[in-house]
Picture 1 (spheres, rainbow, N blue to C red):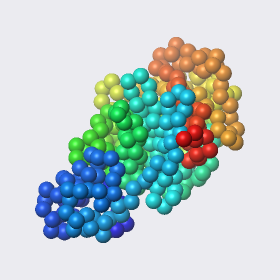
Picture 2 (picture 1 turned 120 degrees about the vertical axis):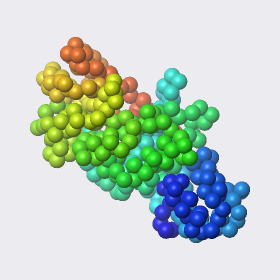
Picture 3 (picture 1 turned 30 degrees about the horizontal axis):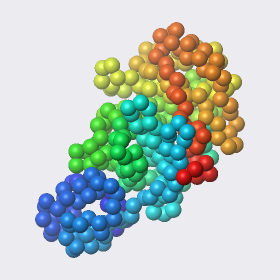
Picture 4 (picture 1 turned 180 degrees about the vertical axis):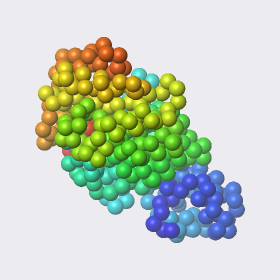
Length: 345
């Protein structure tokens, strides 16, 4: 059992362990309180637990805690956290303040295997999946970094493909949303996927979080080149799945479309995207490409971005343009590669 990190446990797991170990039942809620309702702390700091209980936790579980090894601040207020894990692997989380909200962008894997051509994380390859405890710890570290202001929104749009780490993601979401856990409303959580169809349908059945699909091209031959996952789940299959999703009334699937200068931002691309969206309750989030070292693409001009959005809107497709935040510290969408080269402390 030692290999299980203590912050991967749900309350029912803790209750079973407490019973098996012969401790008083009420100790389970005390332990959960220390794990999820206080700042990250070593087991030794859980001062209202008996010494023998703390020793048993240390004996039976991995109690290591990720740490923020570098905090980078952007001129626009965005903060990037370089989070170092117990095995020295690193991931990045991003805090994005906007008006009365603070959104935290969370990672689900160290690197990524899906090789999207416009994403810096893809250059790392997949190193490993994050454990539930490591996902939960990112939220808790971000919460501490944002204090005294509260985090308001939580998006799985950082490093990795969340649905390729489905079971661990689901466990993390359970801890995040439970009253005994972090107590976050599912309505404040969005999970973004490149379009792993079976897992996407499971996520909608098994949770109440929002979903976003990274699309970026509306023709198979182009999406095959930009996002190799399209060869496995081509557009017809992906969009059919979006039509089948059992969403509450007035809730839409978000389609994320990274605008690549001269590649997918022309009139034909807009027409194809309108056609693809026909008959589906969607909103399109246009994301102008954010360059990173070694990137082969360019950011479209403001006029091109505006024209593309206007074409969608005039055709009845709800479309917004995501404002890039944190570009100066490589914290914007598509720039995360677990590098602290841009950190300014």
